[in-house]
Image (cartoon, rainbow, N blue to C red; front, top):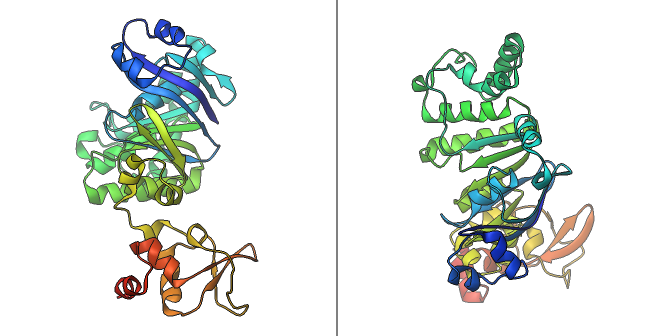
Length: 344
């Protein structure tokens, strides 16, 4: 659905000329020594239809800038961006407006609701801009109010809603045009923890119904692993690793990625597949566990046994799972003393 290759965004005098002088691939040291700010550095990624791709990184890592390059709200300095087969960087201003109005939905950290408009009027504002008639707008507003759990509140004003309800209005507005791709830039970060959790639940519910292609920005690894199909970690404008949560936890590419994954509850992320070993000497009549099962679900059974369990996927045995492997994956110890301590 989205494909970008070697996207750069540099801030400074004549960045296009600077990139050309360095063959399109300057070192970061050269960029900084020349006085440029490297907001996005040679970023390449693909977003598959129906996928939730989460962009993560500390403040200033380039997450928001990259998303704005993907939607061409910001002009990349160089590179290519394709959206549904359309070359965005070659699109005219009129074509871009049409794509954003009809095929992209955007939700930002700040709700940016119109205080003088009702909830329903806020939600269907994009349709009003398109010139859609009043009756159709009202019908669509009713559909979205039900979808985002705000039935009966269409006549309210934003000031009469809680923070979580206001964010639902922002989400509803972004869905009014039935977009192909949904961009969400830290949409829940301004909410308190309880409401944030509720909004994550609501987001997952909506995705189960809508099956959108989503690019979601957060700096919270716990939120990322709960929502994402894949996670891209950014550092100083560079994508340093892309993968599933369990890949980032078990195979961090850098110390920066390792630091993000350090405090996560590994038993909620790691699966039998990610920590299994060869079938080895596991008994043919040993118990079995599903390859995709997370360790939290299967650890009691594995830890209670004295022999390996077989790991099964699509009816075939693909490996074995030992007590030590589970303990090492979750607690980082596998010797007898550590195992006893971890089991306790």
